[in-house]
Image 1 (tube, one colour):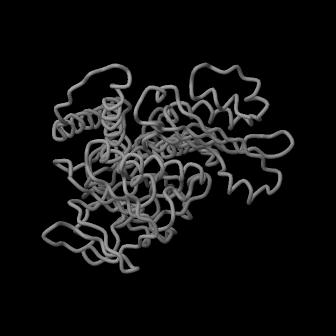
Image 2 (spheres, rainbow, N blue to C red):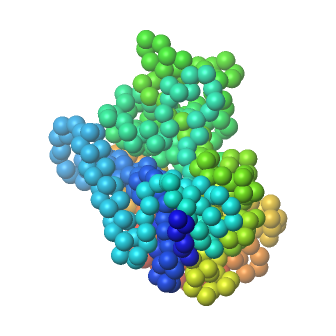
Image 3 (cartoon, rainbow, N blue to C red):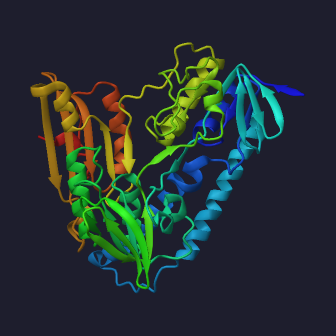
Length: 448
């Protein structure tokens, strides 16, 4: 017997949950298929547990800084296992909250995998289901390179399974994950090496952020090996060694973590059988309305490979439900000016165009304003971590098209500035805003 719904959502991560719940609020009869834990990457092996580990690292830095403020502390060590247990218990509670939220909104949860069978038809477990609208929100997964011995390393998912702090760790990659996890390991006492394929971390971001981050990482004792292209991982009595294409070797390491990117979780869904177009990494191709090339089949979140951030998945999922079931025919997510934060030490906040991107697009119409200063907090600490900021403007009106910051509080200050950029703020608007003193954020409205 075939069960009929208004909406079938495949995937219980941030995007799928947001879409199903918003659709139900509009009165749609919705079912969500998810064989694994609710919450997807963000809740289980991403944003939430990662931020908890960031806080642990920040506390470690704070303990080190306390002497500068007159505290005489005796540190008796850190219990990694206790942190892991409390972190995982918190994640478990969140899963329960998501399940309760689905139930409260009348969304049916089926704990089984799903496969597309044709127009409007989906098999979930052993059951047959139909709906005029199907949303694929299956998320993404870490990439482990096809190299000899690569299975001796772990992915970022495996990071959250570590039962103890490794004495030495290598992170292979230059993006969010390598940058964030290296800081956690170093702050909690591990010897950390990061292997970067090219010449800098965060190559997709403004160069100021990359070089400032690398300086801060090295100051925290993190070794960065540039132009390092892995060839193989070997195991010896001393530990793991990473052989590089140019003949160099790095090691020994107790743990190797691959942070070389992510790909869409799209295998086994039957996409090719129903003719859905996908990209090189399995990402589902969608238009601005989140529609695939097949009528009635939509996709949101990391499964699309577009701006793989949790708030993006949530925003796209909610707007799609608004469009399909809320009578908002043109409702869709605007993928421009998406703010993002990298929880490094210090944190990074960025929104809009990098200086390089702006100059490529607007040439001589670009004017850049920079600030480099020591936050007041570090005025009394042995650790000296400078903050750097940049405004990228275009045209005679100096409309701000890019805003970038690395330093204490960058993660919290960015949200408000992102609103200003979406509203078309100019340098004059910032100049005319009264500064809040003493803060780091005031530099953005006093920068010359």
